[in-house]
Image (cartoon, rainbow, N blue to C red; front, side):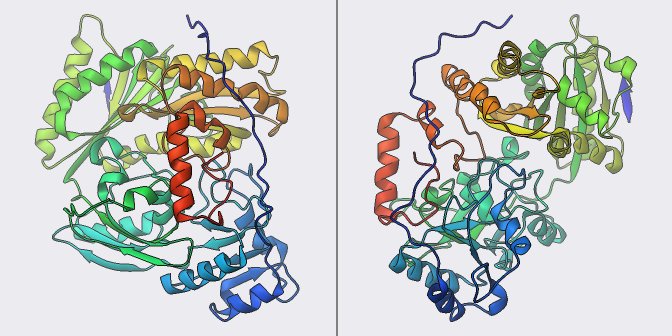
Length: 508
């Protein structure tokens, strides 16, 4: 690699706070008769149940009842794994008649309990629906089943010189249907925009079993309401996404990245402005990592990208990626940028590295993408995926740390680390609060609604890209007005009057 030489707590508005456990008295549990009916739709290997007629071992059901963080534990006694949209339709139609709750589940990589059965709902896993239906290398339009793993889709279109418009740390296990249902953002949003723009069409099974086929491959279709937008970020509460048509961009012919150490957080914003101005259209990512997260990554074998002497007392770090069509052109822009940064009268950076090979390029990204796994190794994380103005990133992190200190809950006995990293380009902060010895009610009580109040005071969003799920239903009012929530309830009532579709999620 080429080496280069005080927060004041706001006066929060008084808000109601309650975190209630939903009760679904209107729903029925799955029984033996139900399993017999599902057996007429699905092959025996596609039905898992702890009920006597099937007697699936509890260990085989467990992965569908526990999220990847081990924070949310479901109660489903049965899991269905359909292979076709028609099978999904028949299952949903029957569940509507019987008033059985349904939890659609993709790769189960979410952070807010959106894919976990809260009580007696059945889990409908889409992982067996994993076929690519078509790909047009001229237009770049991909049509695929909802259960396709994101990385598998990337590998499928790579020989055709295209890439997926989104990239996530969980790409090896998350599914495209789940990505769409949570409106996942990720590392490429700065360059390619959100799924609201790249998704061209959807196939959705509605709560009564009707198949809504809007699997369009048209770039333009201005004929009435754009219904697909309701299901992008709908978290499976309005219907089950079974197929997707998505626009994939051409693969860049030249990619580069740099990793920069900054003396203080206040330099991030002017650095972002400088980088945007000088790199222009080739900038594809601008990622922020605070010092606590960086040091944690080093402790778990990520890096080092910079020597300890070079890093010194740097407070934070930035990863910049470029994607373009001409390597010489892009390197010229990068070299001019770095020269300007280093020769400035008041340098914005202390030092940095510029990747010189694909291996070095990947090692820089490995530090950023590996942080989530490192957090899991440190303990049980309370993860808050929020949007706030860039200038407030570090203030939010510091305020939470000070809050835990003031409550006597900061240290190895309780909260061992508070850190932040995220996507600067879209104001998305990943706030991680690590409980060294596991989740405890008093820790959550100290964090919530405090964090949501901080976000609301800055006119931010309590969920930037992972959705509301069951975790944030009672926090929805911090980001949405009563009028907005009422409109959402009316939409839910129109599509799902029986409230069988992922009940207890999104709406309080």
